[in-house]
Length: 180
Image (cartoon, rainbow, N blue to C red; front, side, top):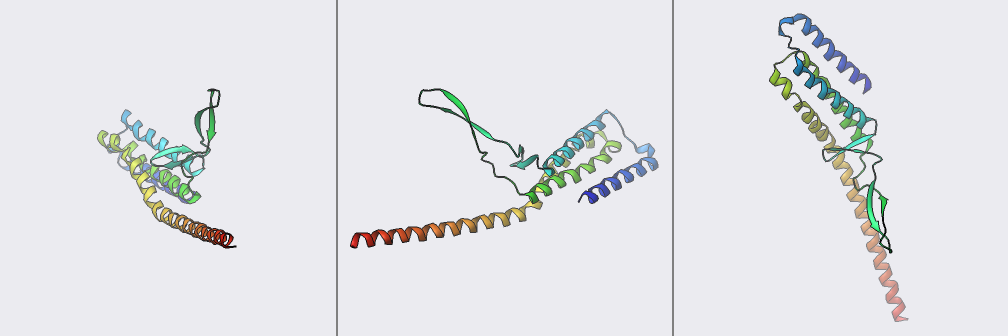
């Protein structure tokens, strides 16, 4: 995937460079061109952090993977202290991380033409690409998440069935003990 990412970036940069040479009169590099540059940088860094398992996306927000939660509790004497607890957010799978990270990194390349061409209104509306790439990453993860959810349901069904059988055996043992 690294080679594909490199090839896509190379192709878009080369194509934009050739278009800039051919259509010099259409260039529109102004101070507003910094908006696509900034958003592209932020999107690429977010994708890289997600891909490298430093952060993960859950519910439209970024969280650190080693993120822990703290709760404030009081002891018997009324003294309070912070106690570290496990995070309540589910840890994503590696495949989910890769798809989301690469979708953000690959869609960041589409900001490059906005830097050199397009009117100011298009430059200001270019951050919409960030939302489109986030939605694209989420849509690409849906089949994997459904498969993961079905596996979790099956595991829960098996555990529930085992608990039910164990409870029935315990009831039988108790009944046998009463009749003796």
